[in-house]
Image (tube, rainbow, N blue to C red):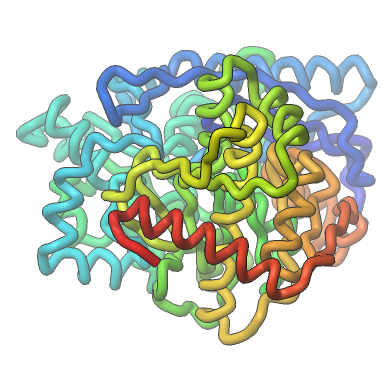
Length: 502
């Protein structure tokens, strides 16, 4: 490892449910963590928003706490890494950085009608072919269009650069650098449905389709750069001015970087509010069979962006929170309650609260709880909620097997819900192959810390194996008969939620 003096990387992971942070030392140890929760609001059915002021406060509080802890420990923060939730959109003033809209979440469904119209038009093939993404309100373009329709309906301010519209990391970069950086990171930009996979540039045809002026968008930047690409901190409460922002990644992309160490071949599943399965794809394949194509990152040393295949499951942890509200407990209580369920129970929860994402992309599907009898109680419902995550991942992984042309040997898992050993054991049983759980729960923050440290000269790629905790391996013990029966029960439940029969 190449040293830059005793120092740490401060990695921030700005997610849907909160902002987490890590201090990562030169030997790879996580020496401090911090967290601030965030709430969501639901002003109308299907609408999901967050307050940008609260989000910014969570970022500065986590960063300030970790910087203070570094100083107290006699070490210095040498740079920042930033991992973010993707697809969420807001509008801001490019002069002041002030948010001019709420943050519309990736979970938001307000543009479902617009997407339904696009999906049956000639534009659907154009969108998917150029961006690798299906027409769906999860992605940013229709949300950005909706916001501009209300804030700047004639596009007068947007067309003259007096408004910015973009994803979370672009706004945070503006704020973290005191307005000096007007950029969006390549991988996050690819989630807007406005960027071509072929060259990682804004697509004029798609900008016209969604009525988003190019002047309203930031430039597309590399994912790393030790400050040159992404800027330096300025006027951030709790942080010293001049710290280089050394790396920015989408949260799922950061988890992939940590799990794969930047190399192709690793399929990872990140379990959170939703879930994301992703693998690097050097062949740059187009989307197929419920799997989307995206850009993972672009490193300054490379000639082009790294391509990836991904499947986005709409509701994972959401199912746990729903069950917790229903049963009057919290997510930890659901996990504990599920242990008491009858072993012979086969109750299925299909958490299609806003339709289904991967592998079906059926937003007309409806949530369903099936398989109950007179003995079904809270424990069985809790277990169905927990198991729904494993069933969805197993269902989706089978599509990866098909697209990649062979059986994926091992699944790497990360995210908060993976702390549940029973969930991980079930996951291994359902896919019939090992599951390797990340050695740290904050894997997105860890991934962007690693990329930042490389950009800062603390490490190089060869060091990543030594920096990455080995994790825990879960293996399958059930036979194919058991596995086929359980998956058949799940797929029948999914078919019913879609108004069909398996």
